[in-house]
Image (cartoon, rainbow, N blue to C red; front, top):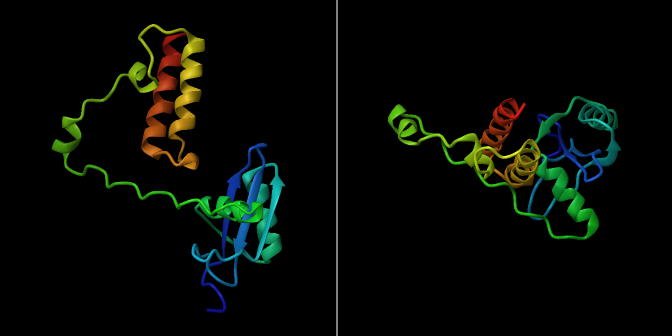
Length: 159
């Protein structure tokens, strides 16, 4: 394979709130053995800046793929083992009977708080649960959205 039908870029946030990118345009990324990107760089202030920088380096349009690839390349550069790829999400309930049997949790329960907690306690609980459920950290996107919605509902109540 000498060229891809679609050149790809993977962009991930760094610990310093910058963006690191890795781009493949001659061969598709491969996990084992890990195929190095054609170009990579870090330090962009925004996701859009990172994408523009990667496209300048490639000289063509790039399609964004899972940020796991950029995180994996950072591990390779550091001499660390490549982390396992993100797990596949289970299929959602499609029939109304399946969805209706599950009772939605209260906003307090989603954040792990007792009803009537202070605004500061809500903020601390949200930050803790957001780190646990964020998709970039291996969490489930649906769980993260539930945490965010619960936080927003409780902020309205504690005003």
